[in-house]
Image 1: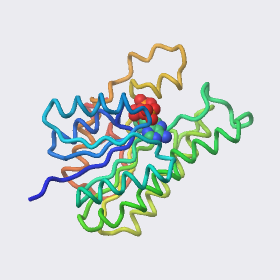
Image 2 (image 1 turned 90 degrees about the vertical axis):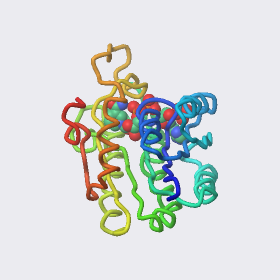
Image 3 (image 1 turned 30 degrees about the vertical axis):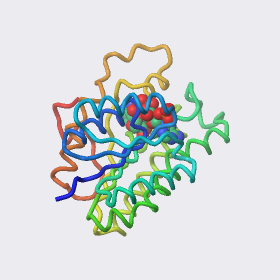
Image 4 (image 1 turned 180 degrees about the vertical axis):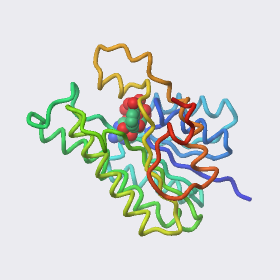
Amino acid sequence: MRTKIALVTGASRGLGRALAAGLAREGYALITDARNAAALEAAAQGIRAQGGTVTALAGDVADPAHRAALSRAAGQAGRLDLLVNNAGTLGASPLPALADYPVDDLRAAFEVNVIAPIALTQLLLPLLRASGGAVLNITSDAAAEAYAGWGGYGAAKAALEQASNVLAAEELAVRVWWADPGDLRTEMHQQAFPGEDISDRPVPESVVPAFTRLVSERLPSGRYRAAHLIPAAR
Ligand SMILES: NC(=O)c1ccc[n+]([C@@H]2O[C@H](COP(=O)([O-])OP(=O)(O)OC[C@H]3O[C@@H](n4cnc5c(N)ncnc54)[C@H](OP(=O)(O)O)[C@@H]3O)[C@@H](O)[C@H]2O)c1
């Protein structure tokens, strides 16, 4: 059987990097991206050092030409089994109230957190359908809860959740999961709490078993929380 391929966006640090490493351990060959080429390559080298295979393509998921390059890489690999739309942005920081949210920042957050994952999924669906593959969209509790200051990010994640929900109803040959990883000790989380000590938050590696369970057991399409998939992860 040929090696399974996973494409993970935002894999230079944080949750994306940990997920990519976890999927490599599960035997997936990887296609990864992030904007900072040096950080992306360093993360890829870390996975290769453990015996993994990585094609790392630097670029911005909001850029249609970069999304086309990712799609070409999957086409050249000849298959795609899993698309993880993990790359995301917090939007404006410190987090502004909606009353004061700069509209250009709001538009940019929707571009990265909603439009880009949908557009990338559109390009990759033919390969995912052919392999009976899966899409994993990383969302957030801010999609469902009303946290003051999280309106821009939360509205974008809510839009991604509903797009995932409809995609699951439309694409019966493909699993579609949208999942909240919970609070994690990452750069984005620090950006949300500038100057605060976030060392009590779990490291991203702690939730990887939740996501590898989703993939290996091919659980039904739907919304998941990492904490519920592996209660000990929190
Ligand atoms: N951390 C949490 O507590 C938490 C909670 C709930 C949900 N999440 C979600 O988990 C996902 C990962 O977040 P994280 O906390 O791991 O964030 P992070 O540490 O800031 O990492 C984000 C990753 O995405 C890449 N990225 C950002 N914008 C990009 C773009 N436009 N194009 C391509 N790559 C891009 C970053 O690299 P470059 O900057 O080099 O592009 C980096 O590799 C996000 O979807 C986030 O919303 C996180």
